[in-house]
Length: 71
Image (cartoon, rainbow, N blue to C red):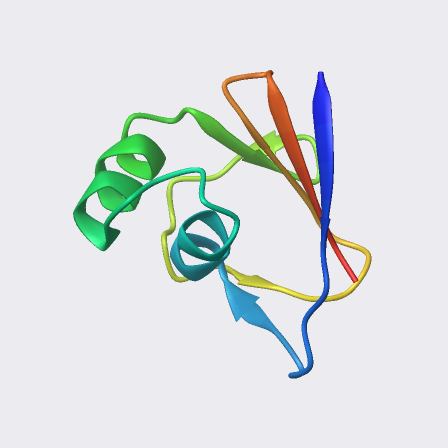
C-alpha cells in the first residue's frame, strides 16, 4: 500500500477535499462517487460522508491501495 502524508494548515480538511488535494481524484464529482460507493475508509471504518472532517492524525484509505495520513 502506498502512503502519502498530507500537511494541512487548518483545523480540519473535508474528506472530498483531501482526495482532490492529494491527487487521488480529479474532480469533486469523482470524489463524491468514490465515497458514496464505499471505497474510502477513514480510521479503519468505511465512510460514505464526503464532508467528513479529518484532523491531524486521521487516516483515509482509498481502495485499500492508497493511504492518506493527515498531519
